[in-house]
Image (cartoon, rainbow, N blue to C red; front, top):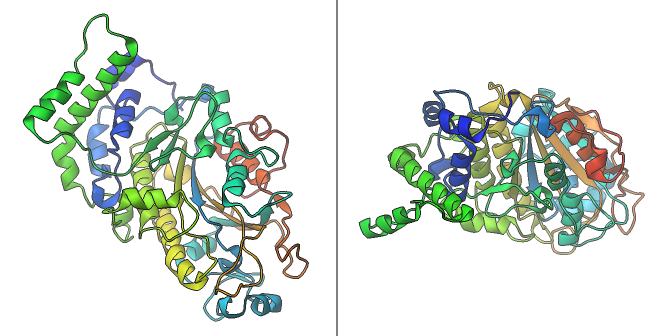
Length: 447
C-alpha cells in the first residue's frame, strides 16, 4: 500500500481527501440504498484524478485486507441457526422450537443452516464460510450489556475499558478514518483512549432550505486571519460540505438505486425509518426495521468501491433477544442477515478490495438448550461465530459443545472468543494480537 499523503498533497489530489471524507461523515452524507448513497458511477467520477489513498504500512497494517464486523444484538440463538438436527437430544430439548429437519440446509457432520439462510449456504458450498463452534468465555453471565462489553473490550475480568480495536487504533497512531461505524454511534469495540472510529449515519445531506438560512450557513464557512485553530477547522469542514452539496446535491437525488446491493438482487433498503431502526439496533429487545443491515452494508460496499482509506467497518442488527416467539423472530431476522451479507459479498467480490474482505458475525451469548414456556429460549452461554469472504477457508472450526453435558442448562464453551480476535488481528489486520488482547491466544486457521 502507498504512503499516506501530506495535507498539501491531499489538497492537490482532491480525491476523497481525509478532510473531505470527515466532512461527509459529519454530515451523514454516506447514505445507503434509497437514501441516496453515492453509487459506483459517481465515485468513479470523483476519483478519476487518481485512486483514493490507503493507509500505510507504517500504521501497522500489512495484509491489505479489510474487516467488516457484524454485531447481532440480543443474543442470537446459535442452535437454531447452525442446527444439530441429527442429534436426538436437540429435538427433545427444543420441542416445538426445533427446526424441521427436512427444511435445514445441510452442512454435513449432522449440522444444517436455518432454512432462511440460502446465501450463507452457498458461501459454505463455495468454501468461503467458516463456522467456529463452542465460542465463549469463562465465568459467563446473562446480562446483555456486560456480555457485549466483554465481547467488545476483549477483557472478561474488567469489561469497562477500551475496545479491542480501539486499542489497536491507539497503539498504531491511527486517525478516526482507519475504522468506521455505520450508524449513529461508535460501538465500544472501536473506542480507544486517544482515538475512536468515525460514525456515519445513513441519510442524505441536510442543509438549510431557505436562501437566508443558506447565507447564514455560508457565513460559518468563511475564515479570517488569526482566528483559533479549532474554529478555522470547523469553517473548513462547513466549506467542504457546501462544496459537496453544490457539486453533488442533484446527483445524490438521482442515485437512489445506485447501491451495489440493489444491483445484485437484494431488496432495496427501506430507509424511511433508518434513524430509529439503527437506534433499535443498539438495544437488546424488539425487532429491527426491515433491511437495516442491508442499508448499512450498502454504505460499506460503496465506500469499498471508492477505495476509501478505511480498514475496519462495523455494522449491526438488533432484535435477537428471543424469550418469546423465537420461531417468528428468527424467521424475520435471519433472512435479513443472510440477504445483507450475501449480497454485500456478491457486490464486491470482483473488486480488488472485495477479494481481500472478511466479514465476521458474532453476538453476545447463545441461548439455553431447552425451550421455555413462552415459545422462546432464555440467555445461554456458548455460541457460533461466522467468518465469510474470499480469504476465508470454509469449514467447521472448534468443537460443537455437548447438548447433554450442560451447566445450568447451557452449552459449555470450549474456544475462547479471543482466539477468533487473535486470528483477525494476525491474518486480516496484520498485527501482533498479544498487545491488544492482554495475552497470547492461539489462532484458528479460518483465514
